[in-house]
Amino acid sequence: MPDEEPPPSAGPEPAPKSDSTGLPSNVAAAIACIPLIGGIIFYILEKHDSFVRFYAMQSIIFGGAWVLCWIVYVVAHTILGSIPVIGLFFSIILGIAWALISVAGLVIWIVTMVKAFTNVRWEIPYIGPMARKQMEGHAA
Image (tube, rainbow, N blue to C red; front, side, top):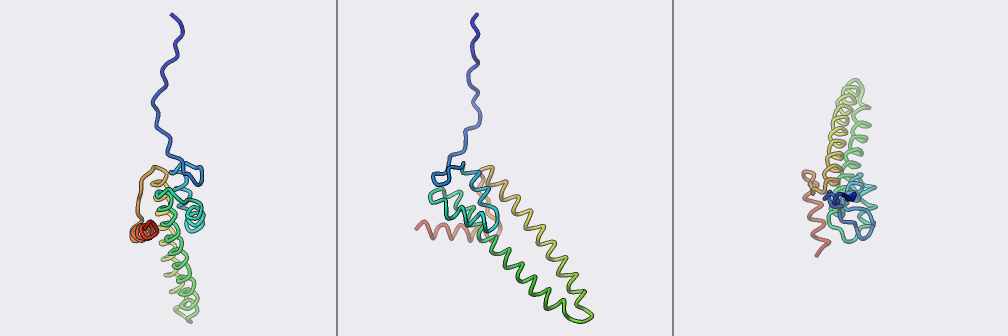
């Protein structure tokens, strides 16, 4: 009996490649999830893949909201922290609040990257619908 090679196994099909970046869509979308920077880069580079463009737009809005929250924190900390006697109390409260916001932001970022990498279109609450509307406005 001659040695026969086994038939090729039917493994998972590779994700479609993006026309503009040459990366698989899921990889490009996951990288685009890097807040602000990744979103801007992939929104500019990717012209056709709506999956990648959605995650890029969502990343831009999320990163912008993140920067805005940081600015509010810095201003509030500077103003309230300088009040004699109770300034320390405000500084502690604001520090705890910023720590909680930071952890929540990190969790959202990780979940978004995992969802993008697994080819699932997931909308961040409040931000996802804004990104979708923005994408619909550009498609028209």
